[in-house]
Image (cartoon, rainbow, N blue to C red; front, side, top):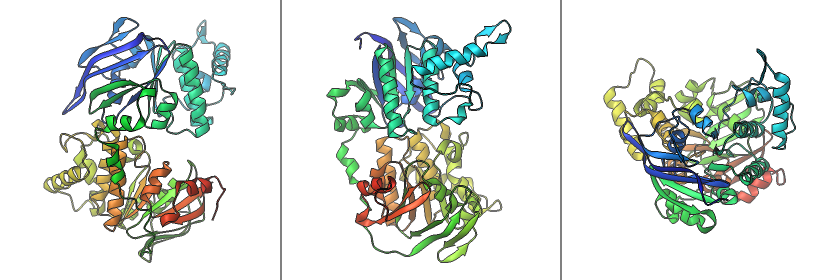
Length: 501
């Protein structure tokens, strides 16, 4: 790794209406380096990347690339300067072939025609460097997310990138796929590329990164050698408080007392899952744990009527209920925070206030309109209770950080005063401080009598928060744990099929 910086961002500032997203931020990247960019949601990481890639225009500051000042006005400008980005949601065209995706917009031609033979041959050659031996003429969506991500990186590298930005690249990958990605990152690093690595997985930061830059509340905290910054100090710098404070979340799983049943599903079935037999008790946190594709989200969607029920019965408070759609569920005092908050949760162009009261308005119906005064009172109360960072309830939700968007969705459903709150990956892609706050809120809501269903890929937070756990494997419930039976080791064995009960 060279000590000379390939990229230097100095005194970068950027404001949006009511929000100072970046305040005099610094960032430097060396050739042949993997540099982790870390911070809480709302710290300014995404805005800094958008400024670097021309998605947003900085208010002030300078960007130096290879000793020359640059000022990208668009992603194409940034790409022409040698800066490429691969986002968490792979930004390619699923209905085009692999080769078309790699060469889109820069197809070699023979006369007036695209030279498909050359495109396919060159794509296959490029992908061999990434140990990908696939049919490049197949549609992109025929391949897994991991392979699509490798293809996105291959395209980014092939456009002569000197800087590669990887934004949450491991969030949807298995352990083996993450290992393969890190091999690719190290291969590119050895070739002299500078890599910016944005992630919330701190163990992965230490596994692959050379240096770490931390932002907090839009300001620069510092840059550190990864091998000289203990994780406990890293967390403290990210959240601006002692790590011990995160341990104040009460651990719920020790409580295994029996409680009254709120919801029961008998032989539940949709197009995606069958033979679902579960019960949810009042005032308890019930977890659905399993690998991606295990069926955990499908059960949540079955309960809430988000997927059409094709068989089985639903009982609410001991009486059979016909839950055909989400509105039926809402009228039965259920609430659902979906896994994909951007696609299924937030209404980006509406204000925080409107996003908060939208479910309550649906529950009351069109003839019982919520007044502006009541909407203001509800929004202000929940903004304060959930510590949502915003200058006002008038702010558009799309301008908030991911963690604060998640809190607004939670506020939306708390406004309906539900008996059952279903949370599917409520802490995915948000910072460690916001995770702790949401975990604490879940446990406290249960202690006050609300039933919660909690789904998470992070077994440690499931262990911390849940009183009861259904473990799934291959769309079947393979075990049920309660109280002190819940442990990370037991859950992992069940998920692997080693300890079915």
